[in-house]
Image (cartoon, rainbow, N blue to C red; front, side, top):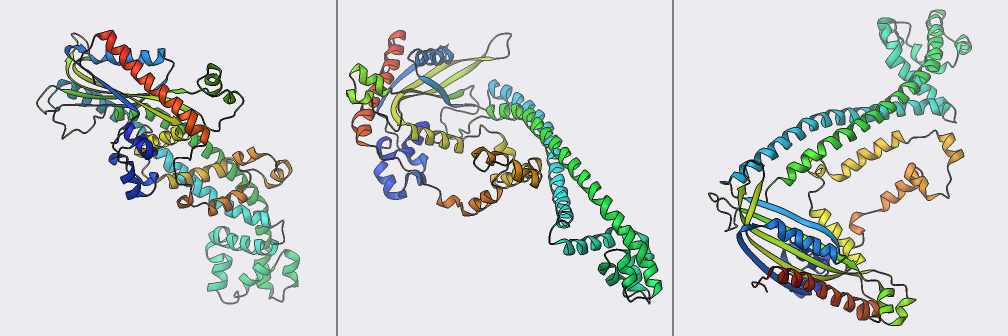
Amino acid sequence: MASIGQIIGKINPKKYAENGKSLFKKYKIPAAVSADEVIEKPLSKHGLIYDSSSETLEPIYFFILDLMNDFKLETTKMVDNFASSPGSGHFAELGQRATIMQQQGTKILVDVNTVLRSVLNLIYDLKEFRIRLSQYDNLKTEKKEAAILSLKQIFMDKVDITKGNSSIKAMALGQAGYQTLIDAFLFSKDIKDVDKLDLNDRVKRILRPRIMEFSDWLEHSEKELRKRYELEKAYLKSQVNSLKLYARWAKPYLKTAQQLEMKSSDREPALVKAFNTILLELTLFGKQKIDAKEEALSGKLPREFIRLNVKRDYYSCTLIEFKFRGIPQRVSQQSHYSFGGRAEVSFKSYVLNSDELEKLEEELKASDTEDVFKLIEGSTGESLEKIQDEINYFLEEKDESQENENEDRSNPFVALIGGYEKKQEKEDKKENPAEKKIWWPGKESFIEETSLRPLAEEKAKEMAFRIFDVYKKAHGMASYT
């Protein structure tokens, strides 16, 4: 897995990749660069080593974390990995906890799958209802004649067929003298039309009650179908809410199980199977926004910056990486461990603008497994979006006449409740993921390049050294770089 420094080097190879020129020559664009191939090149780098079998990692970590907060850095944890040797008691202890979390999560996932199947079945049922109801809607349009014929076919296939040998189709196809029954039924609009037909009385006597039955069925079936349609929609909403509830219940168990997974370190020489050893990797990322107006007032930037609106914000960033090799020791009469050993801490400085920070977040999300549902989806994001679109269509469906009266075409938030569907469909057809804008470090303006970035670089270097220096002096450490 690529480090945060390598990901930053991928985002801006020109400034933060030692091999940036060769990567540009190989991949042409930064978006295609593999972060694992990046050789880090921070603005500055300091390191210290703390080796004590009796001292634990926690005081080192929290001292530096509190120090970053004291220096007004907006701090986030980027990496938190660990690996224990298979022969250690710590490995067995965490393995048992992970198994419990996995079992609890799996039980809830069984219910999730059951509800999900129910949601899918409801969606397909509602689609069929929608098709049937469209025929009733067409009775009020110029398509009325075609809709009547379609509904008569449904009546013969679904309702009249239950009469067995005395049904219209059975008599017309299987009994002599009734060959014209189907055509006569489809042609007749009411009982008066039956009397006008040039047919024998025997066929007319069969036809009259069927026309009456069809008229009654047409009236009542529409009401019942619309009622069933609304009930199915209400049930779909209930099932979707249940699905969200089960998913929320499952997520803590699955997330905890994923967090208890150990990083694969088969080739790590410090991790011997029979030894009692643990390796920890932690990374803290702190950023501080450069206030152009405040810096201009203090004289560090030209006075013009007081009235100047800068298009992008710049941040001085400090990246602190912890690598710890220790021996886990169970605390007496307690269920947790303490870790004493060797800690290597590096302090690196960078400058990132708002565009680069946004891209950093995207890269971390793309390679992160924090969202555990990415591990259990079982299908691509595109297919899940299609299912969600279907659910939204039925749950947010409105009556067309009401929609035409109330919909405000000038309101952009109409799109959030299903408006502009036709327009959105056209836009979706035009949109091609391959045609989306390819990431490229935005060209800096003269002001950004000559004033903002140099000042941010100076502050970033100063901040990384201050944190390093304060910690080193506070602990009287001599082993540092």
